[in-house]
Image (cartoon, rainbow, N blue to C red; front, side, top):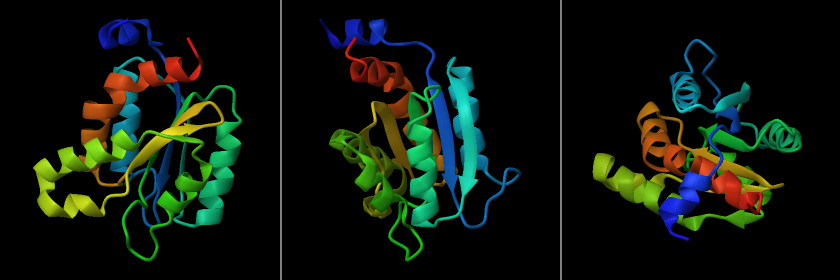
Length: 168
């Protein structure tokens, strides 16, 4: 079966949980989280939940573990905390939770980012994979990074990824 055929058989409406990791944002200022939610809705996906959490690894991990057991959630999209600043702890949490990694996601994300922002793209620790039978994706928190990741990588493959995880 070709890639196109696989994609066509992919699930069309995915239950997604959106998590913003930030020490400073709230719902009114979370433009990245709002962008993710809006793009998901525009593409026919369902919002299974949304939260903003401080960049505290224990809080991030507890929320993600709870979310990954939620039967309404098929994919979790996290934004924020992926850099190398002292408070950036999202990557370490995601790394612990991933059972299968999609290394190509981070590689392609950084390549596409490089085309937009140059060498600073190497500091992104965007990552994706599977945990507890769910898609788990982590993006940088900037609106530009979120738009790039969603439009170029996540939205074109989300249904395909979920379908593959379910063995269909």
